Image (cartoon, rainbow, N blue to C red; front, side):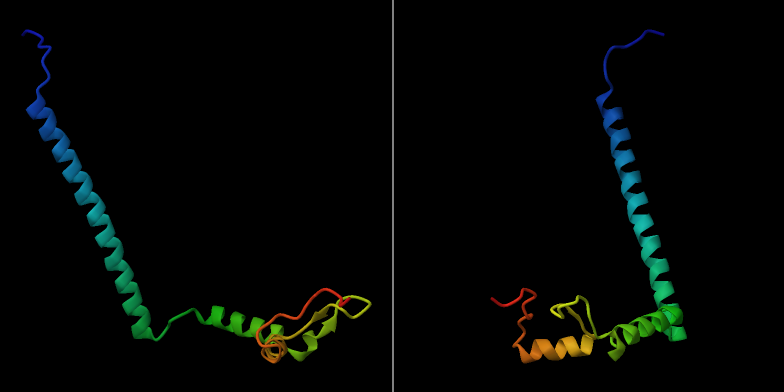
Length: 108
């Protein structure tokens, strides 16, 4: 059998095209598989009436209650120029100032 130095372009092109097609089928199949199971999971959550884990909701409510509690008000330095406010109080201050954050610098 003689060794040929010629490249079989049609065979090489066919193999490359088959490889590209296989890659596309794999990528599209994987994405479809992912979307299928994601939709099944979402449908299951909707059927069960669970949008978020209840523990996460409880933690969030607890954190919000702590952040917005009136006990959070405090002066943070000795000359009382820096204040920590509850969120509800900070919103009222912003509304009273027309949406402008009060200056943190002492007035001159």
